Image (tube, rainbow, N blue to C red; front, side):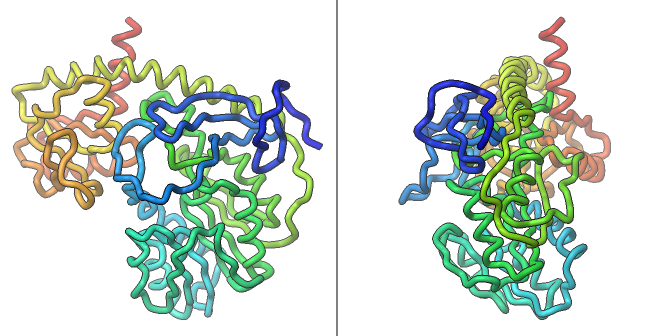
Length: 400
């Protein structure tokens, strides 16, 4: 029996994990096109979006926005390949004849890297997105299955490893899928799972809408680790507590799924507090973007480049009022592969950065250090303006 932290009306939908009916409304995402609302389970603290809408028949166009409609670009999984493969290598003999299920293989970044490191392994690439599934069709020792993981029926105990990267948050029933991952693994088999981390909601510089329409469940380290363990696993490698963006766990199949899930009132209270902080911080930062845009607009007629044309750039233009036409060049290494322009400005590659550029604005949180090093190499005399510093100054100016 789950004790509930938030008394109130019984909802028609229960928590996917603990089955509590005490789902407390917390937030309506900015710009949702699917009518989603975010709730916190008063029983276990799992954050989840309702309704649990299924995939529509037609794929939506790519939306590179700072709002909830962000999605369908699908290049982010490739950023996590090295971390997942390194974690797997710490717990598995990659020279052995392994069988691996790659859940949500996408463009095949992990599959290729794994096959290169594991010369005697065989892999099933599970990818329902017809736009990218063929990326794995011609890989050696690989079978491509074009299905959602919920619609598969693999044999019991058929795999040595299940790898799931940024997939579980998309599922309507993640706990059931985790239990199925345990079912298809051999005794002692490994689960390597990666998901977005709600810890980012506590950051002072968050301005983009974190609760995007493509994600139905939102995990803290606590809620995801509890769900993994309850599905029949023992966690053998915890997530990196310094990483506020991603959760990466390695777990071993050791038992049977739990029948009853205990409540976690502390997690529920902390989740509600985190949601409240996120909304306050984001609202404050969206207002501060206007000040940040004014600082950048004042740089003209200097020759200015901006590196990072994704979500932060979208909000800088759309909410802050930054004029992108003032830019000498707009660089985005990854988006350039998938689209030609952003907000009317042609996308460029790092090779297009002029050596005599006066200033480079780094609109990236995760890759700021990497981009800064590249700018210093290509344009050593350029002034570098980091997003975190730009926003920090804007916040201070508004508080003054």
